Length: 252
Ligand SMILES: [Zn+2]
Image 1 (cartoon, rainbow, N blue to C red):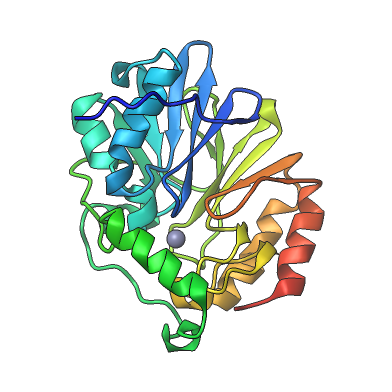
Image 2: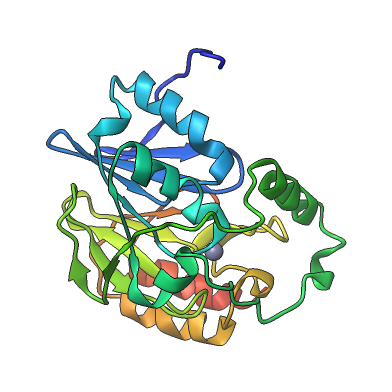
């Protein structure tokens, strides 16, 4: 095993650090000594995760919870390994629990053929293959949450159900940090077209794009100042504006 020194991951909001192996972002939230991991990257991001903990002077055993925004392979990632080895609980919305545990993944509402002319398509698929994220590593045991539930994990995020990208897709709102961890609900870089700016995920990766756009209404009242997406850079501003921009961008 290599032990290349790692600089601590960037702090993108108070006590919230962004990690990425190049395909999707995942976030480590610190709260009075406890740690919550929001999404678990790709399975191949495990070593990056361990090195990042090390750079922060933390250990795997300090991770109190893994919370998944939804059950896609580049978010479920190494969650099962963290569950077993930390050990820790893995949380997911009740409507995505079966898929996180290995049930068949739903298909996108558009085929992938429309993206074949885009360099970003190949970059993303190469990253998914490299990260072993072409299918989900099933999580043997999950804890489930419902809409508008405040999770009793470090940072006390409120889970808001935003169905569309997947049936159990959710965002995590960390109210004390004014931070919205938006997963694939709002992203700032399109992993199939490469377009930057606020938008919903491309239809090739989304089960119901019309529903994903309509569901954004549930975000408008959240008093967040920063959107931390799974794809792309942080976005600073009021959520109502973020929703407007994503709706204006429309499907892709
Ligand atoms: Zn996704």
